[in-house]
Length: 152
Image (cartoon, rainbow, N blue to C red; front, side, top):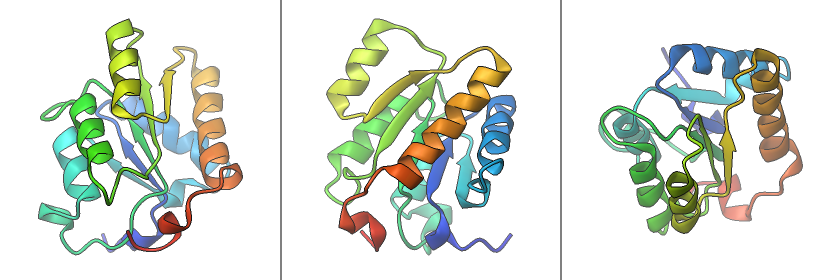
């Protein structure tokens, strides 16, 4: 696969293949799915964001990270912690999209700098609507800081 990483606008970090497929379908309805790069665990997400390992030659940064909390290898809170504590990456909006309604997860996410915390709807249509609305808001309505428009 020869991907143009500079065209990636959404980094989706999701280990559940069913949820990832639903999210991609929802985004494709609005021609946003070709701008999504999906990784399945926290370690790969960190490699991608920090252009390390497999992604050492990757250019640019995503405009948005959709991040699940319950991930293999490195959990979502640790991914969030590293992204938001790094001067180059802390400006990237991160939206937690998870099944966890636990108060400690919500509080810790905001303490670490998450931009939004959304509990995944269990209903198929509501999940699709939620992801579609996220993509539309963060990519089309939200005005990113100028640094995100180019290289970080």
